[in-house]
Length: 340
Ligand SMILES: C[S@@+](CC[C@H](N)C(=O)[O-])C[C@H]1O[C@@H](n2cnc3c(N)ncnc32)[C@H](O)[C@@H]1O
Image 1 (tube, rainbow, N blue to C red):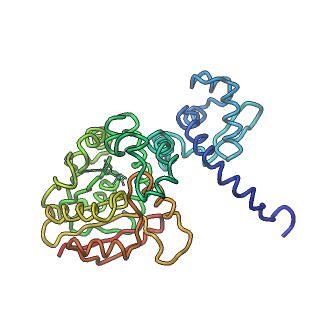
Image 2 (cartoon, rainbow, N blue to C red):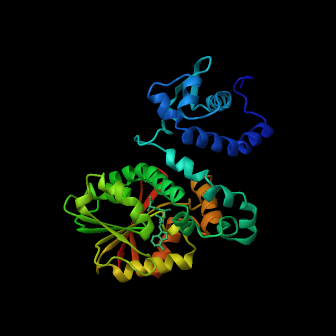
């Protein structure tokens, strides 16, 4: 190793980890100001960008220098910026966009509970009631704009995940596919694209379904998707032969997961299938991005990430036999179970 390839000293690595907090907010500020879309549309000088996004020109220049340091933009000439592939992901409504997810994760609904992580660890539960006054779903129903941004942010992630799921998972001859807690229905649409004869039911809280109407109407699949608002603990749409639960069980502790799965079981047709799409913790101790999401679940919801074996045991307690665990190649795994 020469001096250029030597690993940085531990203090430098830890300082870089710590300033991840600043970097998250830099991403968010760039995204909220709409700078990536303005640059993509041809505005490159700080002076004009500042005018178009109503920002202080000097402060915006400093923000963009910092954004250049972490690789979101490059300063191609003094006070002129171009987007990098990383910065492209902060554009709105483009394939692979993470813009809404970035904004939602750095907004008060997530930022304030994360500020109390140590208390979540001491207590072994979420810090949302203390910091937001409400559980996250009621907070988002009350803070409508932030809630819609979170729903679009879930769609950002689900667009990436559902392409992976649609590639590896064949829904077979399913005719009525219910996406439980499906938000804007991105996964449902991905699965329906592989099942041309099936119809879908998008089921979520009534406030979330209201917000999802536009996304479904513009999806080209509106005529195949029924929208149902309700509570998945009590109001499960009946008669589905395939129930999808993506990023639902990880939100909840085991006893609540069992209530949700039993609710699916009550509504589901005999011989029907249930498909979980979740990040799967490795079976043996090793680094995994799912361990970081596990912290998000702890501090936000008192939920947890699980291994495939833990999901298998949980489903078995609720009347489901796991038949297949399919890796997607991405962060998520697909667990298919049969109703017994
Ligand atoms: C983490 S998001 C996952 C959304 C979607 N499945 C996805 O992966 O993009 C959890 C979803 O559960 C919904 N949810 C929470 N509590 C619910 C309830 N009691 N009944 C129905 N939906 C609920 C939320 O509104 C939210 O859309």
